[in-house]
Each structure stands twice: as C-alpha cells, then as structure tokens.
Length: 143
Image (tube, rainbow, N blue to C red; front, side):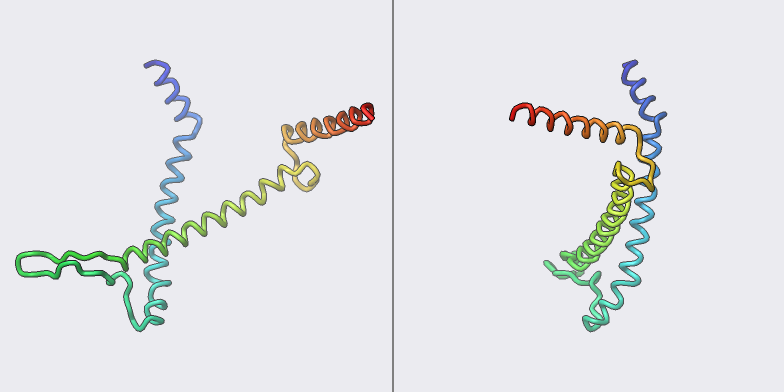
C-alpha cells in the first residue's frame, strides 16, 4: 500500500495529473466553442442551401405521440450535427499536431543549425556517423 501511495504522489507531483487536468478543461472549452460554431455559423447556411431544413429537428418517427404515450423517434439530425462537430475537432487537432511535429522534426534535425540540437540527438547522430564509417571500413577489409 505504501508503494502505491508513493507512486501516486510521484505521478501527481511530476505534473502529469495537472497537465492532464488542464488538457481536459481546455478540451471541454474547445468542444463548446466548436459546438457553437457548428450550430450558429455552419448549420444556418447549410439550412439555407437545403431549403430551410433544420438538421437538429430531423428524425425518423417510430411511434407518433398520443395522449397516453410520448413520441418515439430516432434523431438522426442531431447525430449529423455531432458528426460535423467531431470532424471539425478532429481536423483542428490534426492540424495542431502537424504544426507541432514540424517544429519537433526541425529541432531533431542534426544538420539544421538554426535550432540548437539537443545533446542526446547530437550524440546519436555522432554514433550513427561512426557506425557508418566502421561499416565502410569493414566492407573494404572483406573485399
């Protein structure tokens, strides 16, 4: 039990939990922004293009409402709106990660002198060069 508590303490202190919490809060706020953009900006012009069809109201009625029972329906219009939200969020996250990876690749390139190469990448690059030279020497001795 003591090692479990120590492991949790290390996890919380190292910032992983805080980073995760911040990411979740920002993700939730980002989701609300995208939902508002889809509902208030994307869907109205789409509604105009489709003769004022409001997707969120589209449904397939399985049983009509009566005095004693509520309507039973499949709301496929809301699903379409949620899918549009999802694709916009997924595309935005893809673009952000692609942007970050571009800088990451640039930082890891040992030949790029505009960004200081981290020591571990520089050492690995040197080891790679030495191994290539060694392989060349070994091949020439075989022949």
